[in-house]
Length: 81
Image 1 (cartoon, rainbow, N blue to C red):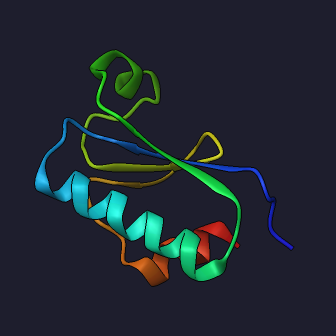
Image 2: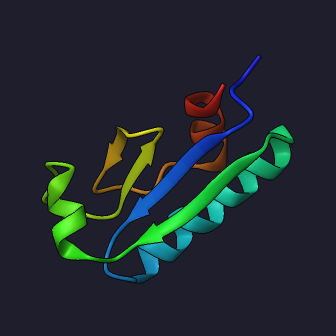
Image 3: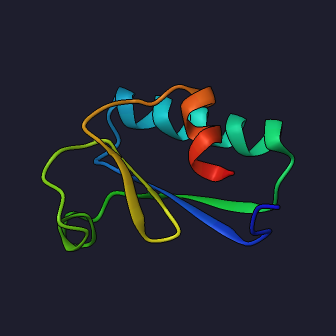
């Protein structure tokens, strides 16, 4: 069973790809019916703190899962379970 208190972070400046990644992440959380916080981070200092130079970036529970691309809802669901 998945952790009911997952943290899903979308790192990026607010571009269209970042918005799509956030949308896919929210949809994945809803479809899995899990309790997870989805937050958008646009602060460049926080983003570089994760050691990434490309956006959008998907981080789940502090672990970078995807960099510089927009994973599908199905791909994100696999990261969450």
